[in-house]
Amino acid sequence: MNNFDPLKRIQELCEERGWSCYQLAKASGIAYSTLSTMLNKQNMPTLPTLLKLCEGFGISVTDFFEPDRSLTGLTPEQSECLTLFTSLSADQRKCALAYMQGLSDGNGR
Image (tube, rainbow, N blue to C red; front, side, top):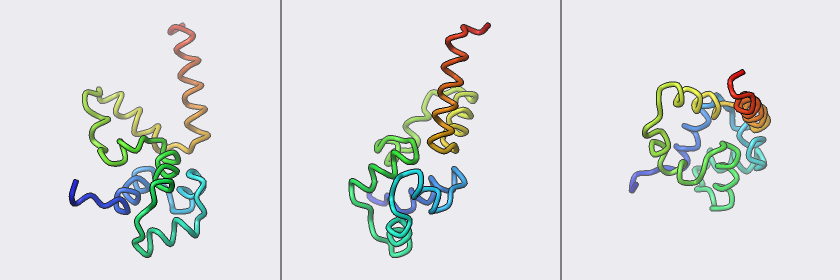
């Protein structure tokens, strides 16, 4: 973890989701100017900022620092679902979870 670059990780997560800096700012509740300055001037995020970013991405801080940890043991279908889920906005994630809950409550009927 000595070579871990939080700014690069933020950019990777945005690329995975197809998000712009503006979309990340909106999802995380961080001012666009703050986020843009942080990324462009290579300023490391503070812990409160990092927590907001992780919330916006829909991941834990552990997943931020250990991205491969959460995929161990998943089937290809589960991995695909997780990949698709993480590409959604916060509102879309809520809808997807509600839909899956509805399917689960129906017991496959």
